[in-house]
Structure formats: structure tokens, C-alpha cells
Length: 237
Image (tube, rainbow, N blue to C red; front, side, top):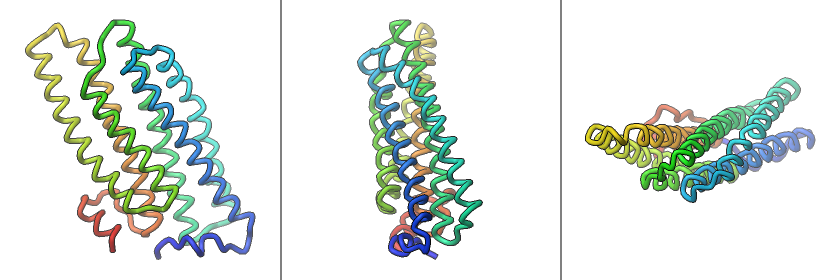
């Protein structure tokens, strides 16, 4: 059974409607904070701003608390309302997206810590970090927009972009490893960059997961282990 936005808003209990809208609104608010945290961490690297790196790390506590609150709200709705069909899928999708957003926050906090370390050591930023960072930031933003609008086509675009980010990540890793083999003096510097790139690649994966949850919500089909072509077919059928 597919998700029907019209029927979703026509429950007997208006309180139930309000509860569903509230947890979705809370998820979007958490997403906005995660987006800002990621922007701060990447800006800290690009502009060598220790204050931005510190702000990104401090944001993680609030994100963790929001994750706990949304999780408790989802459990409460399931226990009290016993939702079925598309309503149940909405609560499950929000619960899963909530977990992925919290993990984006964790990875971003890790990036901010490495940014602080690189600033102390006078290590310059990396072109690939900035490039992949822009792509991943766009993925996070688009995954949240797709969720807010029930836009499966945009969700598919996020999945497609994840493939591109994975390819860029592999290329950057090969270049860094080659550089370390040729210039042992660069090992410590490059290791910091490698860990940042690894976190960015994981953030892209979590953004892709959020898009997968949205497709499951709207289409009723789990595409988490599907190929790009299969996701495309699911979205456009």
C-alpha cells in the first residue's frame, strides 16, 4: 500500500494528526541543526576558524538530546495510537531517519575535532575535503527536503549522488596513500585528512539512508539494498 498524503491528514483524532506532524516537525528541526553543524565544521577547515570547530562540537550534545526526544515520541505514538499502514510507516521512517541524523552529527563532531587538531598543528585543508564536503552537504540538505515534501524523485537523486561521492572518495584515498608512500613526511598530515574524508563518506551514506526511508514511506518498498536502477524503477513506477 502506497503512502497517501491526503488520507494521512484525515484521522478521526485530530490529536493523532497533531502528534504525527509534531514528530515530523521535530525531525526537520533536528535536521536543520545537523546541517548547520556540518556547515560549521567544514567552514572551520576552510577558514581555519577554531571557534567554528568548537561550535560544531558543542552542537552534538543538543543533537543527541533531540534524537532521544524524537525516539521517545515515536515509541509513545506506537504504544498509544497503534498506527497501521501508512501511518505506521511514517513513524518508522521518522524513527530510522532520526537515528541516521544523530550519526551524521557524530561524524560531523569527529570532523570538527580533526579540524581543531589540524589548526593546532598548522596543517592546511585539502582540496578533496572541500569538494566532497560540498557534495555531502548538498546530499544532507536534499535528503531532508525530500523527506519534508515526500519527494521520491529528489530522494533518488540523493542515492545517485552517493555513488558519485563514493567514487570521489576512492580517488582521493588512493592519491593520499600514494603521497604517503612517496613522501613519508606527509604521513601524519594525510592521516588527519583520511579520517575526515572517511567521516564525510559516512555522512553521505546516512543521507542516502534517509532518502531510502522516505522512498519506503511513500512507496511501501524497502530499497536499502537495491541498485540505483532498481531505486529508479521503484520511484518512477
